[in-house]
Image (tube, rainbow, N blue to C red; front, side, top):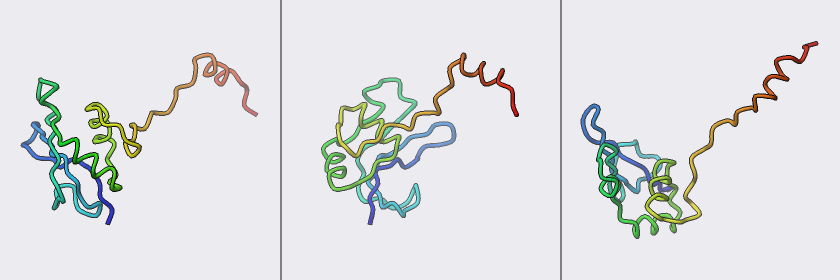
Length: 110
């Protein structure tokens, strides 16, 4: 059984609210959870109240092989949790420098 740390969506339309859960990877997004670890309210103005989690329990699950989603990883990093399992969001494709783009446009095609 692979455990993941991921968000479960609650709230009404256009007013999303998320719970942070330790959950079996095969379970649907809003399915049965193993343990509730906190919540995330993106609409909350106060940054301290926006993400609240039991950080000691999050570390426990990370130490025992739980894999966090990208969003959970970034939220935990912002909260000060350092762990090798935390992944940074995937960077976008690097953009070509303007000079290289101009050379590519001027180069004759054979």
